Image (cartoon, rainbow, N blue to C red; front, side, top):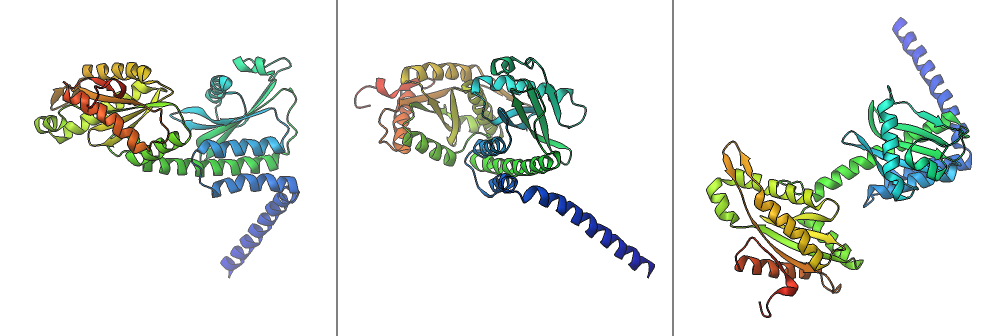
Length: 355
């Protein structure tokens, strides 16, 4: 009997507390503008985006439409470093913004919002150029884990005119939406990556190249494979062969660093997409990679070995071609390299007539 009374009292208290919270929530949601802001943010989690940055841009647009702020940046946590997902600030200032947000983060003892103001300009590099006197750093935290942050900046030094309880509701919802988007990005990345090497797979490559051709983006395409790989596998074993595929692909990816994109075409064959590079420029890039592979030492507890690779290269000029026709032309150049000594790069345009 006593237990039932206690349960009843707890239920009444819980309902009362919930009603208080709901009344507080209603006073912020009922106004049309406030309601619109939350709806704009929440509906972002209902859509699939080819690029998480597109959703991040919409979050920024929603905040700027509701609050009077100069600049807004949304960042995600990656490898213990805050990296920009989207910003309304010009790209040349992004490095400065990342530096400032990570500086603030490193000085925080707890994941709490921090406001910095100045009567002149804030001290980080881009602030003076953009006349920034105020910034508001807001960590986005899920169950004590930092998943990202928002940096709001303004040219006025006074605090923003925000209602704190409603703003906390907005931030909570942005955090949830960001977490969902990051989950989707992770799942999407897993679907487009090769299981062994961790680089982009053939299905992703097909879509990528089709998109580049449809947009008439200038690029050159290289295809390469590891010379005598079947014999190499027979000699050293398939486990060492797998290690070789991973070592070579990771080396090539590291050498491309902002110049291009690497895909696994199948087996020991890989494809390199080089944006805005002519066949001559791409040939120089590829030759540096080829020579670097030649110097690689692949080793594990079973021993060590080295490999060479042959390359074929084609510059896209005819955008009526399909991606498979582009690959075929690069593959013809690769075949020429293999037939004429291997461990070399052949440009499609320099091949002998009829070859």
